[in-house]
Length: 205
Image (cartoon, rainbow, N blue to C red; front, side):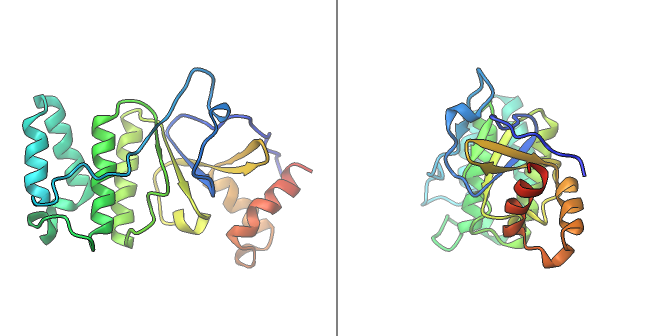
C-alpha cells in the first residue's frame, strides 16, 4: 500500500474537502495564496422573492456577469421551485445556503473557503451544491470546504481531494485512495470517523 506524505499545506487546485476543521491557519496555505471566506449573511432583501432579488442583482451587473449568474441559478435549481416566487423565510435554510454559495461564486473571484456548507441541506440540495462545485472547478476555481465526516460528502461526485488534519500537518487523499484503504481495512465495518486515525497509523507508521 503506497504511503502518502504528510503536507504542511492544503492543495489549492480544484475542490478540496477539509474534515472537521472550520478555521484554516494561514500557514496551511501555499505561500502567497489566500482564501476568501463565504459571508454569513445571505445578501438578500427579505421582503423580496428570490426572483426579485436575482433580478435586482442582474440589473447591477455587466452583461457577461449577468449571463454567468443565470447559469449558476440554473445549476442551483432554485428557479424551478415554487419558493422562487416567495420571499426568503426562516424555514428556507437550504435555499439560503445555495443562494449564498451562488453569490459568493459570482462576486468573489479568487480561491474560496466555505465553512460547513452542507449543514441544513436536503439530499436534493446537496446534488445542486455538487453541480455548482463541479462547474466552478471546471472554470478554474479553487474551493476549500469543511465537512464533519466522509459520510457527509459521500454523495458528492465533483472531483476533489480530501484532507485530514494530523497535528500541524495534513493527510491528503483522493476519494479513490480512501475507498481502497477502507476496503482493505475492513470494508463497511470500518467507520469513516475511525478511518482518519487508521490512515495516520497505517500510511505514516
